[in-house]
Length: 232
Image (cartoon, rainbow, N blue to C red; front, side, top):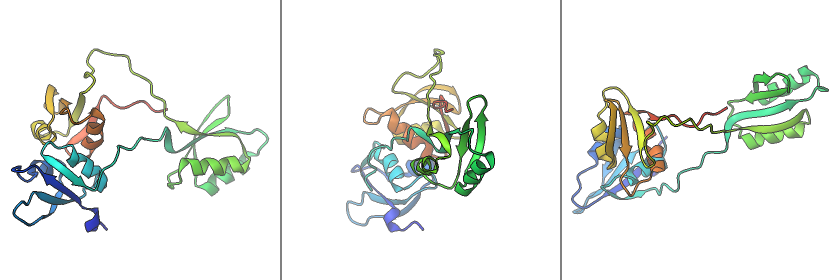
């Protein structure tokens, strides 16, 4: 259950109106407004796309907001591997049925086997962290080596149409209002490829990385373009 401690508290600039545009852009629900003569603080319930800290980061990026609670902290750095996956070297001296029994006991399935080198790509959805599953597989002694399935970025060749550094192209859901989104974030629309595909330049106080972190919280956003790194 989402209790009062999970709410986001937002204080706006003096004279600023309630962040109604942010409400429409994020579909958040206004929980309460602080009473008093200088009532510039609102409380929101977190949405379905993130936790209180994620939405606090979004509100903290708005030009009309002076403070947020909880402190969103730094943007999390993704792990250098794909969660829920391993690569293991099969040993020829271990019977296949024994290997399969171990996979089954761990709740792991074989996605594929690279022929010729005997490396199996494994996956699971039980939520066990990669380091813990690596330890289990290494301690079993059944495999030649056990490694995480690391993320590998393969840069795409330039086409001449990429947005410059400091800008981000966003695909919106059909019928969305890009001007509203840009106005709420204090960003500038620098290019419009189609009614649903726009390039945004964040205001100076906001980095592109922050924009990448907060835009997926907005239901009007379908995806960020160009796609992220290819993962193999």
